[in-house]
Length: 398
Ligand SMILES: Cc1cc2nc3c(=O)[nH]c(=O)nc-3n(C[C@H](O)[C@H](O)[C@H](O)COP(=O)(O)OP(=O)(O)OC[C@H]3O[C@@H](n4cnc5c(N)ncnc54)[C@H](O)[C@@H]3O)c2cc1C
Image (cartoon, rainbow, N blue to C red; front, side, top):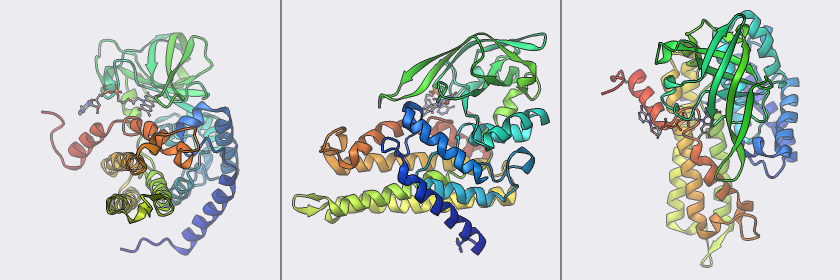
């Protein structure tokens, strides 16, 4: 197979690479590709926002969206190349929740007014979003959620609690699933809403991760008034809209590309670090672990290319089970990479904030943060269930 880009695509890739190579010279050292750091630390959030403005000025945030909503009608492959390069440079600047998850839903299901109201703000990096879905008793089984929205005139009055809401304390708006028909226990009674996070009645409380960062939140909703015009799609049909959130450029190329860069840095570390008088790179066990990771990374990159190819040829819905596969392949690869890095470093791999901490302690930090990667946005088990039922045609349950 020929994986080369056309000369035009190659020129575009170089333009992205030149841009990120320059901009990432100014990245705060605390950031280092960490989602937790972006939401936790002011300096990292500011860098993310400023980079977002620069990307928006170049028209790169939403390249594949229609022009009327702030995009430039670019082919999906150009968005893919952008994501690949951004992953390689471990660069923030794109709202992963608004641009990555909500926008696909809006493009397919929202009213014209809603699209014109929200999409251009996302493309200009002016409005960040959080996802108000999970509840204390509804995670994988999201359809069992109990947050209630009752229609009164032109508004819904919302009461309930959300949990694990990444970035709720930083973001401007949230997209929420709430129950509008209490008679229906499952997905048929849910509606999809866009909620201004400054609305009275919303209380946000931090939940600290095991790496001590403030990314997650609990969000309490007490008599929160949401205009009817902020409901996306029909009442009680929010489930359909919610299923669109994972249907855009979802090849996970940014994570595979990020993994490749991390692996290169780990290989460098093993070449330059001695253990027992010999470079780690000469140790057969270390070499085998690195070789294994290299194979998995290259296989992941190739898989990612096949996802985007299928998305371009067969459409986003057809490629949905492949995208579900990419999610668990990529997140589990990043986990294995970080666990292996800590293993290779031995006890030094657990050290932070010390001159003994290799690479400023980033691997112990990554080790803790990557635990949640294969849970957020749907766990690996749920993704495997999707592949089993959608791609293999197996029954949905026992
Ligand atoms: C990093 C991160 C970011 C997150 N950000 C957000 C956010 O911004 N907004 C938001 O709403 N939520 C967010 N979440 C929550 C996330 O969506 C849930 O954690 C996830 O859906 C799993 O739900 P749960 O934690 O309740 O686990 P459960 O659903 O209770 O699952 C527990 C275990 O059982 C397994 N399991 C459950 N059902 C099945 C099944 N049918 N078949 C096989 N195995 C199954 C799961 O895979 C898991 O291993 C985030 C989570 C993480 C870790």
